Image 1 (cartoon, rainbow, N blue to C red):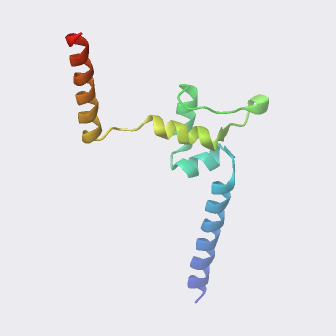
Image 2 (image 1 turned 180 degrees about the vertical axis):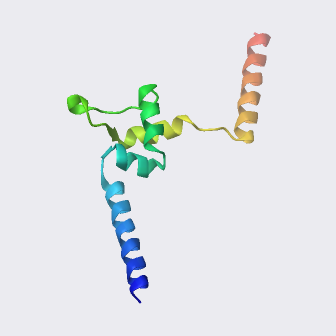
Length: 101
């Protein structure tokens, strides 16, 4: 009985944390790590390489704007085979038009 109550409390706590992360505009390093499902060291590495935007007011604690995290994810898009084929076809068509001119 107590085990079930403990499990339910953990589920509720998890849902509350998830809700808080989803409603915040800025996240600290720990929150961003949970939100992105990346380790803190991976986030530090991305910041030190300048691959991801971050904010450091006062020069110590690191914050991330959630929209910047989303943009970083979008930069890693891998095109589908169909998209690549369309791109090749468009390229060939454009070059074919130029060579005819």
